[in-house]
Every structure is written in C-alpha cells, then in structure tokens.
Amino acid sequence: MAITVEARAKANAVETYLHVLYALILRDMRTRFGSSLWGYGVVVLWPCVHVFVLIAIYTFQKMPVPLGDNRPLFFATGAVPVLMFQYISREVMKSVVMNRPLTYYPQVKLFDLIFSRILVEIVTGFLSLLVVCGVLVSIGVDPRPHDPFLAVCGYLTAILLGIGLGAINVSIISFFPGWLIGYALFSIIVYITSGVIFMPSYMPEKIYYWLKFNPVLQLSEWMRSAYYPSAVLQIDFLYVIMCALTCLTIGLFALKTVVGKTSA
Image (cartoon, rainbow, N blue to C red; front, side, top):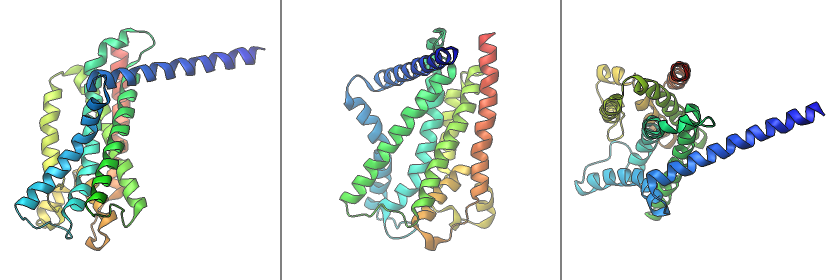
C-alpha cells in the first residue's frame, strides 16, 4: 500500500511538472510570437530569410561561390549550424530576463524557464531547417548530404554548444544585466569569423590556425564536410565536442550558484 501511495505521488509530481513546462512553453510562444500562427511563422522563416539574402547578394553580384558550384547549398550548409547555435545561446539568456518574475511561483524554477525555451528553440530551428530544405528542393537543389550521419552529428553538436553557452550567459546576466548587449556584439564577431560567407581553409595558414580555435567555425566546416567530401576539411571533432561539454558543465555549475544565491 505504501509503495502504491509513493508511486502515485511520484506520478502526480511528474504530471504537475509537465503541466508547468507546457504552460511555460505556451506562454513563451504567445508572448513572443503573438496569439496567431503568423507570429510564430515569422520566427521560423527568419533564419531562412537570412540564408537566402546571402544567396541573393552573391547571385546578383555574380560572385563565385568559394566551394562547389551551388550557391544555395554552400550558404545553407554553413549558416544552419551557426544560426542554430546563436539562436539557442541568445534566446535562453533572454528567457530568464523576460520571465524572471515567474520564479516567484513555487512551482516554477529557473531551470524550468531555461528548459522550456531550449525546447521551443530546438523545435523552431528544426522547422526552419525543413523550410530551407523545402525551398532548396523547389529550386532544383538536392539538400541530402553525402554523409547523413556526419551532418546530423554536426547539427546536434551545434545545439549542445548553444545550450552550454546559453547556460553560461544566464549566469553572467544574473550579475551583469548589460551582458545582453555585450553578447549581441560578441555574436557578431563569432558570426563574421565562423566561415558562413567564406572558406576559412583558403586563408593563410597562420590566420587559419587561430580561427580554428573558434568552435563555431569548426561547426560550419563540420556540416560542409558532410556535403563536400572532396574538400577534405580538417575538423577537430573532439575539440568541438569538448568545448560544448565544457560550456555545459560550467554553465550548470554556475546556474547552481545563481539559484543558491537567489533562494538565499
């Protein structure tokens, strides 16, 4: 009988947590995107617009693509993992800034705000990826990678790195609210040096050596290596994964400190 009561209590706790998570996700989507699907559709399409603006610029300027002969595929393979990383790492931080008052409710924890926003961003990013692939197919470009497993691993690593840096950002902004603007400037630098619009491996070796310390650059090369095996890109897979896991570990420990200070 005691076991039954304990099991029922655990089931109720899980059900309550799922209800809280659902409410946070629903509130997040309604406050950010509006009550209609059009608002959410704009957010899904925004990364796609980013990719196709780059394609349009290179097409109208008649600039040669750095790798291969397909402009849409080149920019899409570089931009998708980079944008996925940037959106998660930024929006996780913004979720805490916007929804901090919700933690006054005993059912809502700081981690719940972060986890709900991560789920929203992963789903949004995946829908954006489907839209990009659909547009590529409609214009006659085959979006299937030469090595699907390598492409999926690169995409998942971009998500993991975004979550890790997002957790660190939450800890920083808890002490320095101005970091929201600081990280925006930092993101611009990361994007410019990530290799979305150029091939880093074509640069002088001394410059390329230092650029490769940017794990986001290696993420774009990771994805491109799945589509352009003949390019023979040299990616330090262990370095990128360790960067993601290190960021996640530091972020979780820092969040524990932030939660402890808040509760105190």
